[in-house]
Image (cartoon, rainbow, N blue to C red):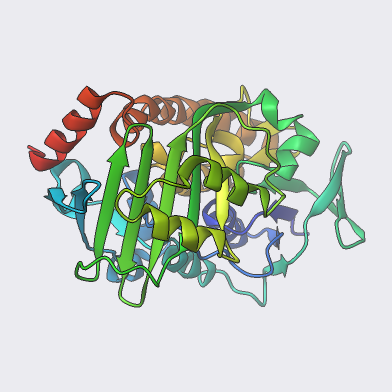
Length: 369
């Protein structure tokens, strides 16, 4: 009889794990809170060992075909260009693939045979009860089912982690930064398509990514810990008004207006997740739910793909799931910690706190060698 697995979350980590566990003969169910795949978001990167994994999955050529090749400009408050660079051509990024988030999610999703893998959209879980040989799961939309294993791939605010390991604040390291994302097709930049425009001032950054048929805008800002509820869709708009209203530099008024009128505004805190173990009993965590590095490292997607693959292959190689879980923790943790340590540099470059750091970031982009 096939072992039954529930994966909570249908993004990079969850879908990659679903692909491998189905391939290895498991009966896989994926449950996703959203009513469809979440395809919005800024471009992301596939790097390092993750590139070897997508080759093994047979999707490298598709990912390469959707590569987001673009030129970036750093501008000042008056929209004058301070630096121009193409990240795809910088030596430290050669071989990496930058791709729109939605394109990569769809590509991985299509590797999964829907007639054999059950995918439940618009639902989540409310309770986990671990028994000796299985896990009892209660679903938000009713019903209970038993699984051999449950894996949380449900992001930084993971429900699985809360239910199986404890409160989020126990594992979260807040980085002193908040960010917002929204579609901003109406903003005219005066630049060719496939140009990313970056504006920085002390403690703040604004970005417009232009695509063939539209544009996305991102705001980042340093702030102390705010009392906000990530489930309240209106509160972030008040926070953005507080930090950006009245700032007339560059395109900030237009970006703020787009976000205040967006139906799909995405707002969150920048943080990392640090845990001593990613498994307990028959429950495990992968991706941001286990070891979110933050986007300042540029490695969240690659860690998700690598971690999910390592876990699946350890389960395939070990009859004893406890040995597989132990190997997953032991083998992957040093690499995860090395990636998480990069966040200090990323914060300094993207959100400089002094005029000296700000000028240094422009200089580095102007002279990448």
